[in-house]
Image 1 (cartoon, rainbow, N blue to C red):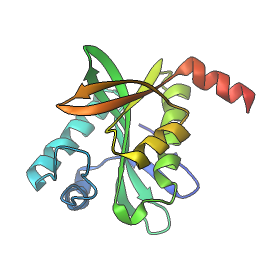
Image 2: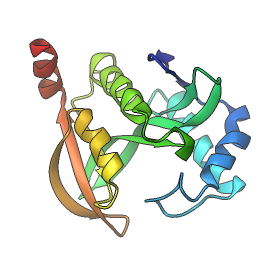
Image 3: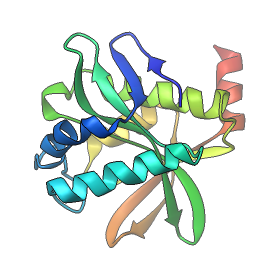
Length: 176
């Protein structure tokens, strides 16, 4: 997996040594809001292993999001492999430490991941799964040119499915 650079962020593959910082993040209730709850260090280590296994197998995975100003790991943004309503999907998922909310950083990261997914990986389609009450995440998806496709139940939670196809992305780029 390459390293992606934006104006304020570096998105790089996760490393085993990230486990301690990631465990701090995943133990934060605000960071883990709209998920299944906070993670223990063991759960975080298993999550990190899954992400690194995807990468080793050449599958799209999550990037560690590093704030360039502080050179600090502040979250993740990248790809999850999901089964939604019986269909295999590639999700752009993102989560940042609350100290970095409301600065446009999640949008910056998600757009870099989207462009990498469509441009380099040539993915046919991406989605984002968002709890209806998570308005900031919805705004990130919308700024990422995704449209609300449908509502469903995912892992027991009401979920909005935002989607964007490679063709839509290419058409949007042609107009810019």
